[in-house]
Image (cartoon, rainbow, N blue to C red; front, side, top):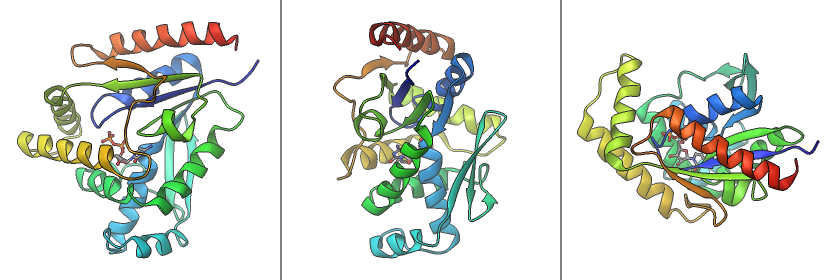
Length: 227
Ligand code: CDP
């Protein structure tokens, strides 16, 4: 049987990683969270005081940055020069730094190579911003997951609440709008729906409904492709 891949793209807070993780479990797929890799580069720059506006400094720093990925009980763990940073990358500050370093071509080239290598020879579900358009242009199934800004803000706040973190709702909303701007307007591989992607607006859907909608598309496509 041929390998197949599911690409899920969409803006911050659209629910990509939550649904991708659960679909990976249901279909026994390898889940690859590409945002975590941009976050790791962002964290590396913050920790080492590398000026995020200076492209050549980041390109140089990449040479000393060794990133590796390991699956522990189905959960993607990410290491920076041997240190497990899986938890440390989950802050708003690192999310913003991730979006800033994601505009740099050298960063994208390095991470896209890692992502394609990880996917080789596996059935995968990968989420991010440029999976259907750039990383896996031949993905068997492409989903563009969206939701309105109010709903995405609410979800991000709930996430922070669950983690026991303080937040200011208006500030979170502002940051998401800023990140959308950054991601959609950057020069290299901006966030956009691939022409052949199936768009789902999850604003009025719960997680189970989104999963069901995606599984329906997957079943249909996989049947058509005969994989
Ligand atoms: O979880 P959230 O939607 O907040 O973000 P993420 O998926 O962890 O990604 C963090 C940032 O990395 C995004 O805002 C993008 O700027 C960047 N990113 C990207 O450029 N390309 C990807 N394939 C994945 C993430």
